[in-house]
Amino acid sequence: MEIAVVAEPVVAIQDLLRTMLAREGYEVRVAFGVGGVRAQLEDAPRVLIVDTAADDFLEILALVRALDAPPHVIVTGTSEPETDLGGLPFLLKPFTSGRLARLLPS
Image 1: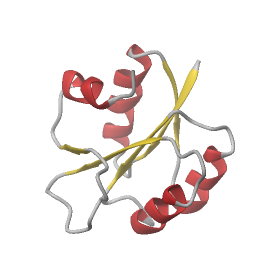
Image 2: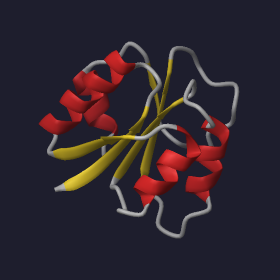
Image 3: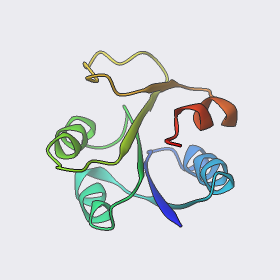
């Protein structure tokens, strides 16, 4: 089973993402801050979903961009980010499972 890591500060949204991603066949893990994401990257997740309000958001993006084989990253948020995402997909909240599924790797 492929791994999806969720770096989302709101517990209710963590639970929602856990349910949506599990339906897509992922083992879901939650990470907090750059240290938590770094630890989860050791298991080579297929997907990383990170919210713009997550602790260490910019450091998480820098960490992932420095990897030789980064996971598929989806950025979420309640408004368009002011930070250049460098082409990463952005999922505006609130979102549906269908919108999320369209951004997941096939």
